[in-house]
Length: 360
Image (cartoon, rainbow, N blue to C red; front, side, top):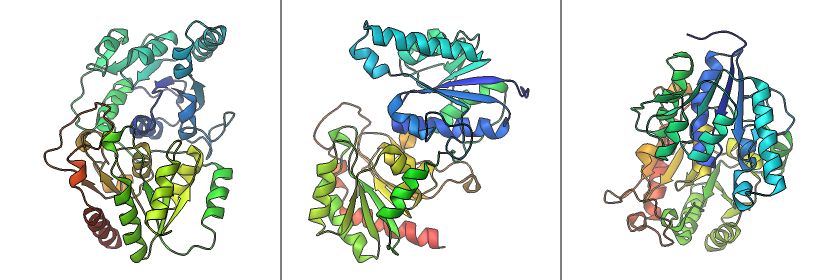
């Protein structure tokens, strides 16, 4: 087992939000097992607040897990691949990574472009899954790990175990504390004495999006149960959130949050309700009970995670999914047929079960 304090590890998981949150438990387990290691991370700028509240932060509450955050603006690079700005940013990233002298690189994304970034670090050990999402990526790994876990969190833990031969358990991850975001959430909830439930009506594509009218009915039902309902209005989802507020006759408060503010807000809720989205996985990562509304994606692989041991911080959850829903990542606009069989009464019943369970 590798225990030397000077060991330097680089993690490559560029995004997106939910996928990065699924990688955090494995890296947190490594950090707890090897507190003296240097652990750095390469991430897209949009998701950097999941690792650090400040670009210049040092290890501490505002950056609790990693020592250095490298930014890789891959979406911008794809739009202007031959521009001077793109080439300069790639060179700067390569120089910064090579200067750190990594002993191993963990590649969690399983894509060719992320594996290519991992190789840019010029490290002898580049570790990834034996069967990555993009099959060609495996040829850029020097070590390939055959995973057996069903959930992607379990698979990431198996890949992380290969770094030093550790036996790891997926633990509740460490997330940064942004003082300004915390203050903003305190102001949003000032004077409120009711338990807060977070609704997130958005989703990556239409087939995963439960109808907004049903979220409105859930908001009304939650108000009758004595909750304050806060609706997260993600970028481009402001109309969805406002519609829920109107349909619920102002039973809900709309919150337009940055990612750092969403982390702070989620810390303050007693429960979250969402589809297969980043905010649902954020609530799980923060140890909050959740009701997941699933359709074309498989909750056994991507849904809320129970963990091997409740003492490790994982909260109870309920997943609602029709038995005939099939796994399908086609970007359809219309909600998947099985998703439409889930009613507001189903969701509120799951809420009642979780409340009774957490009270016990």
